[in-house]
Length: 89
Image (tube, rainbow, N blue to C red; front, side, top):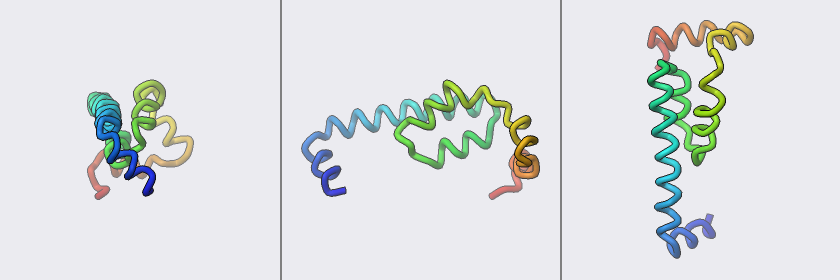
């Protein structure tokens, strides 16, 4: 981690570019997840910082997956039902 700190101190522009990149992708992915009423992906994207990788995957690939159909295949239906009812804290 000391290397990363020295890079950031020497190049604050690099940090600004990194933050702009990450925040932009996160914003778009959160907006798409909320428009699709996908609480599961909204919470996952909001919680984890993946430098835009998860956000890009969601925008281009994962939002097309039908979570109800996937949940029935891997038995996540009870979890999704609780998410819909807002019972998971």
